[in-house]
Length: 460
Image (tube, rainbow, N blue to C red; front, side, top):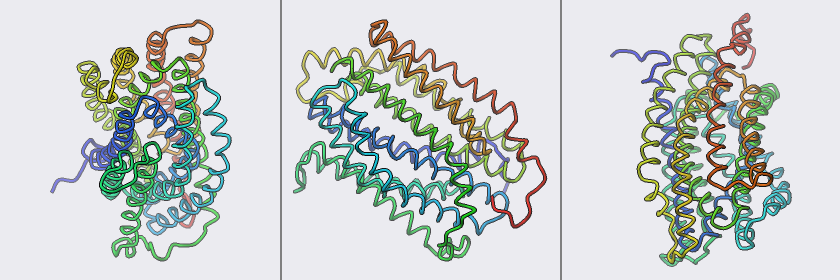
């Protein structure tokens, strides 16, 4: 049987596609939740978007630190230090457990942030309720994330996909039952959707734990003998993961601020923005699976000092991402009205028609945004896999906050219309991939790995 080309398209597909599908499942789950809630009214849908994103913002710093588990596991795997892979996971779980009370302590600050934007009174109440319930279940989310990062680092992305599919089915069933009071379940409207998400995360966590403690992983990775604290590995995970955590936190906070700034322009703008960003996330989040694949494969080859294969992995990721982006562009340009109508309430009125028309124009413009997203996710993932997390943080976070400032300025000083502001925002976004490309080509990440080999007992 012919062996795979190192860093080739086939290897990238094997690693990344299950993650792309896994991320697609998660996005589909959130999307369906919003669609269910949109039938109750636009404020419910808008609250699910902003409340859900606020919960992500609150825990995303901790999840970002935990995310470096992928790169560390991949690097140890590439360096043939197999026994340390499970030990890295244990440190990530310890970090997740310690992060939970810190996340809960941030709840009052999150409430202040949500209430600092001029959204409707009903949306304000609903989004805080949605956020609070999700945050109480975040310990499950963070622990599941740690285990998923471990399997991704090993290249066992199918395990993650299976767990995600289990969580998806669980969440969709319970979300439908809780939102509309079906099959004997209580009707909980806005409160039912986050409870369903927590239940789905727990189901996925159980699948991952069962696999980790299975015979294969006990034998190969000593999963039953790794439960101890390692100061050195924890310190490395935190040191390398902090930039990633800060990056994701700042990015998500900026994304949340941008959405709430659009929402502050009135109910029509808020509804159109929720529709557009719901579809935008359907298109963009699967690309994060490609980014994770790039981090895993580049991390493996960088750990093995095979820089040619690391570079080849990037080009393979670009080829896959561009094909995917082309399909999304056709969808956004060719049928935006159909996409917008998915969120029509049971009793649409004049305001809904205006919001729908605005959403159609915003979706078409988002096709440009998606077309350059592949460049960003692949090069950012490669930099993280190579350990250059600080540069990735400054570049990606900087671009998001520049856009927030632009949107806020256009609305508050120049009094621009929503569609004009969105168009300028999309055009500015196309510039940012260049900075990530130049950082990778600059090769500063290579210098650290080209130095003398580490002693055999030194931990990565």
